[in-house]
Each structure stands twice: as structure tokens, then as C-alpha cells.
Length: 276
Image (cartoon, rainbow, N blue to C red; front, side, top):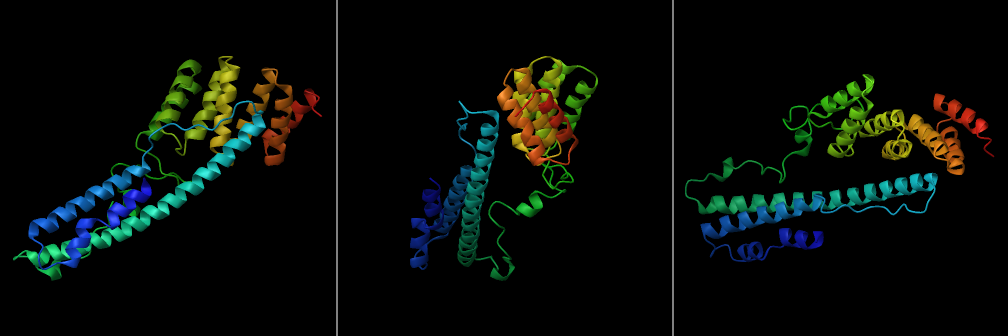
């Protein structure tokens, strides 16, 4: 699909015909070509929108194997995203040049148009550097870690955290769940998963808590809450009677975060469980 749109955007038959016979084209022809090109670029941009909910098959695996599978999938998706981004950027650059050419030819056909006043053609899709900056109305200022935070994201997180701090764990769990579905992949999402796990633990929903801790760790394996999330995952597995998986997971806490306080707690827990 992406290849077809790329060809359509860059090798439109109408554009090719117009360039081969500029002396016979009319003003309406050029306007139509310009309109078609913009439509094709919009179709290309839709390739960046999700159309389904593909899932990684994690059935029949241990907790550690599921963590590793998630990390591999994240790496694959990151590489694929970078590849598509590069191709889209190429299309945008070439498409912008073609639009500029059409605007130049359009100006030539208009009696009151001054070619010297055309200026540079705006980049198709806009200037992403400016769109993501603090002045953009649809985005809030980026947090200190450089990730972009959506408007309302901090307020929604604070509301859920306030419910958690007040001891209203049921409401906190619901608010954090809503947050993670509303701001998937945001800079606060991993922490939201973690605090949801904490709230669910207080409600004795150990199985659900374990899933939340796993989501917190896999979403940000080097994040601020990663050591505690992995520790709590191991402890939750132990509560669920999954001692073998719990021992492996707690061992990973020390392996990945040897200098953390979570590592000390993990080692103590492993000793109590008589892990090998």
C-alpha cells in the first residue's frame, strides 16, 4: 500500500503529461493536478495511522520469556517505524518540490501573478519541528526526559495519583487504567501502569496487579519505576504460587539493577523462597 501511494504521489500521470506539454495545458489543468497531488499526500499520511490491534503471542511462556518477547517486539517495531519514517520523509521532500513546480507553472498562466513573489514552498505536512514545539496549541511543553506530553496528560495523571494517595484504590485503579488507554506510549504511561499495579495489590487483585507491573516494566525497561515494577512482578508471581517464575524474575532485578534498593529486596525475597 505504501509503495502504491508513493508511486501515485510522485509519478502522477497528470503531472507527467503536463510537464511534457506545458504549452497546451490550461489554468484549470494545473489547478486540478495540484489538487490531486495534495489528495495523494493525504492518503500517504493515513499510512501512519493504526488500522487494527495486532498482538504478540505470549501464550505458554514464563514471565521472563514474555518480558524478553515484548522487548524484541518493541525493538522490531522501533526499527520498522524508523524505516517508514525515512520513506515518508523522502516522499514529503519530493512531493514538496513537485508542488513548488506546479505553483510556478500556475503563476506563469495567471496574468496578475509575480513569480519573484512566490517565495519558498511550504513543506507538505507542515514543519514538524515547530509543530512539536512549546508554542504548538495542540501540545503541552515537553517533560524533562524529552518525551512529548499531550494536553491534559499531567492533569489526568495527577487526578489518578491523588485518588491513590487518598486511599481510594478502586477509583485510582480505574483512573490509571483509563489513563493508560488514553495516553498509550506517553511519558507517564509506565508510571501509570505501576501505580495501577500498586492500587490493585491493595485490593488483593494480585493477578491483575502482576499484569500491570509487567506492563510498567515492559513499557519502560530502563525507566524510573522499572526496578520496583520488576520486583513487584516477582513478588506477585510468588503470591500466585508461581515460585519458579518468581525466582527467575527476582533474579533479574539484581541482574538488571544491581545497585538499586529493589535489588536488596529481591535478594531477601529469594532467600525466603529458597530460590536456587
